Length: 441
Image 1 (tube, helix red, strand yellow):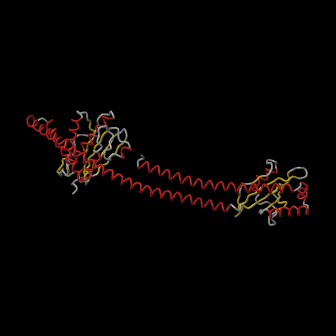
Image 2 (cartoon, one colour):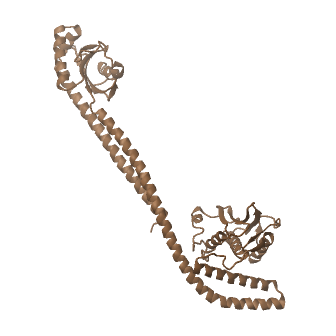
Image 3 (cartoon, one colour):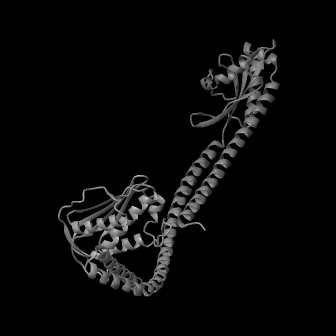
């Protein structure tokens, strides 16, 4: 099954491909229509130029160049009739100097005004560089779009002395131009519409994903409640026996290890109670933890010693162990649980990566709040893992429950604070907890 983000990507790609495909079809239709009309007009002009040039005899070219009035009149009648019957803008004959020998347009000057534009085609025929009939691309003359075909005319000696020009107005050009403009608008509107629909779909999809996530979390909390109820029942009785035995041992021997066992048994019992209260009522994680004055240097020092004992003195700290005096009112047990779990995660990540256990634990006063920074120089967290970092039951460890970071954020949030994670691969991770100096009412 595709995840929410992959579904969004798949739908976005499908929408994009659909818009691109539709626009490609539109522009392909425009291009094929343009080419078809261009080819059709070119073929028509070639056909007219060929038949007209065939009807003009070489001796008539000699007479026309010599200035024979009767020949001029006959040719003028012929090309005028062709221009009228075939709806041409002009049919004309030019000499090598681009001077009109005859033209169906009586208003034309003696010199061919489009010589600069069409001279390459005319010269190629006059100098024998091209064989047969040549057509020009569509060109613009004033407000008109025109297309011409040129055919060579030979004299009695067989030399090319003149060129026949057949010129037609490209009537469809304005229609094509309008079609192109409409296609541009349609393409723009389709892209804008696609973006708007995509944005709307993304919005609705995200709302659906959030609803699914809330449903999942609701089910998770229900499962968590049942699980904790079983754990509380099964663990509390042997836990109390362990605590009572450790307490008697401490009274007899005053062993530091026995005192730690008593403290950790109390901590575990309180954690189980907090989880159970949270799972039952969906309420605060601080229900069994009253606020009190916390001396942060002492608080951090105790945690450092506990972590060092846990890892047999192999921990190297990234900063000096001495800290300036700093205290605030907070929930000691819950805060200890959060910071200890984060230090433990950092140490375990260093060991799992085969690196020395390098940790950092600093406290500072940022004015209106207290800042606690937990650092490690382990492998870091990937961007993919970062997105799921606080998701219930998500873990990258073989034995992890996936609840530690989720509950840590809940605890810090119930304290009125915030928790942020900054991690770089192969460099390490810094987790910053920011808490108000006074507990949230």
